[in-house]
Length: 94
Image 1 (cartoon, rainbow, N blue to C red):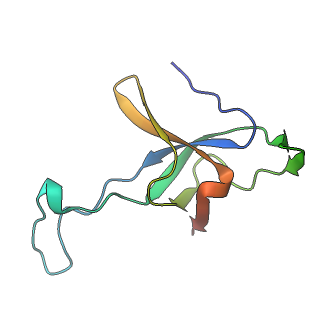
Image 2 (cartoon, one colour):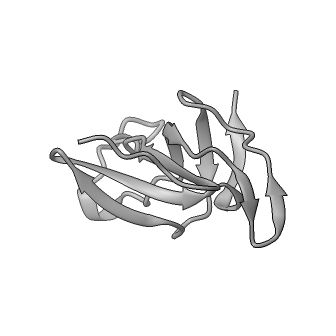
């Protein structure tokens, strides 16, 4: 199944959190923070949203940083993705 986001929505897939610290300590699953870096999987067309013209600035393949608890998680073909508004994306990681 393919998800095609509407308007200013973006489908992202979270990048796995580091399992070890810089000093080599292995972290338990409960000790890891929820990742905020994600890869863009699909991008909506933009257009008129709430009376404002929205231009999409992210593209498929971009690595982005999102607001900590933003978006809606959806399970698609055994894979969990998150659908967020472009406004919930804080930065593109280069």
